[in-house]
Structure formats: C-alpha cells, structure tokens
Length: 277
Ligand code: UDP
Image (cartoon, rainbow, N blue to C red; front, top):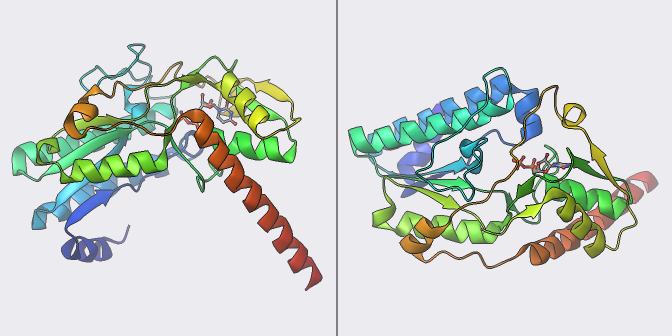
C-alpha cells in the first residue's frame, strides 16, 4: 500500500469509502498471509489517516463475519461464530472483524465518524470470475457448455444482492448522521440454494451443460468448512434509510448472462483479430 498517496487522496476528499480488500474464498485459502495483511493493514492506514483530518469513513465489511452461526437471518448484534485458526477460510472473517473493531474503537475513543456495512453476496455484470465466485463461474460454464460445478451437495444457501442496490445503500448511509458509529447489514432477505442457483442459470442461459457436484476438499482444501446458510435481517438498514433491494435473483441472472454473452463474443472476436495480425 502506498501510504503517501493514500494520505493525499484522503486530504482531498470529503468522505472515505473504503471498499478495498482481499476477497474471494479461493484467494483467501490460497494466500492467507496476503489476505490478513491486506485487510488489516489497509484499514489501519485508512482509519489512521482519516482520523488526522477527521474525515468520515465508510468501511465495507462482510457477511462472512457471522461465520458458522445458524441463527439465520443474521442480525447485526448477533454473536459471531468462527471456526478454528488452522482453517484458512476463517482468517478472512477474523481480519474483517478486526477492521470493524478498529473502526468502532476510532469512533468511541477518537470521535472519528465511521459507518460499517456487512455486505452479503454482492453481484452483477463485471464481477470477476477469477477468484471462483459462484455467479460469474456458473454463467461462464453454462454459456460455454462446460459442466456447472456445484461444490459440496448444493444444499448450502446464499442471498444475492444486485450491485447498484448496494451502491445506493452505501451512499444513503454515508449521508445519514444517525448511521455514524453503527454496523448495518446490506443484502437481500431471499435465500436460494446453490443447486437451485445452478439449475436457474442453466435454464436462463438455455444451456445444455451438465450440473456436477464436487466435494469441498477438492474445490478448496482438505477439511474446508462452508457456511450452510447466509441471509441478512435487513430491518435495521430499512429503518435507518428506507433501504429495499429492487432486483431479485432472476433479473440479476438475466443481466449477468447478457453481459457474459457479449463479453464472450468480444473475446472471440479479439482473439480472431489477433490471429489474423
Ligand atoms: N460455489 C460452487 N461452485 C463454484 C463456486 C462457488 O458451488 O464454482 C459455492 C461455494 O462453495 C459457496 C457458494 O457457492 O457455497 C457461494 O460462493 P462464493 O465464492 O461466490 O461466495 P461465498 O458465499 O462463499 O463468499
């Protein structure tokens, strides 16, 4: 991280919206040192520099901090239930929980105005498939006719939120004085199992791909623990800013499929042009 550049950017801005982090379960499992250091040092620097100028800071946290809790839907004041330290996956949740603790400490001790939001699976066109996130992975597999890879038995569920719903919630939280010093869930209350998601992607993409299941040990690492369910209670943010997600899973998948179709055509054209040169 380039601290002088960060200091200059913070000097010039009105509000700091800190979204940068190491994310994606595959990346976390493969590069735990990078994950922990990026997430903790990055936020430490942002808060330290913002505090010098007393600039309001928004910190993006994650639904992952709820860990293995079975108390679904998750509320902001619930206990966090994390796995053991030798299972790399939990280092991400822990690093983001430390970010939250530090932000709240800056608010309580130094009166730095901070707002924290726990983002649930946020998706939309242009999400990278590089770190194995499920929707871009399934859509690309479906469009190319490759097998759609469901990890575990597919009974685990998630709730997906469209990126613009999340962006508008962040902007409204930042404008709300009563949000300062608080933690909010940003998500969509509707859950879907991963097997059902695979079927929906296949159907909407008009794909003939096979849906296959892959054991977690092979998909990630030996002894990998997944979260069986993950859905937010959104009453706190609804009350604070009148938040309501606007797009359901069908509309989200249609947008991602349309985008990935165009991207696929562009890539094919580019590689053909490259071939001709
Ligand atoms: N998943 C899957 N196949 C894939 C990628 C992911 O079955 O190719 C599953 C993954 O095991 C998890 C869910 O889909 O249960 C969501 O995964 P993602 O990495 O998108 O986000 P997470 O909720 O794990 O942060």
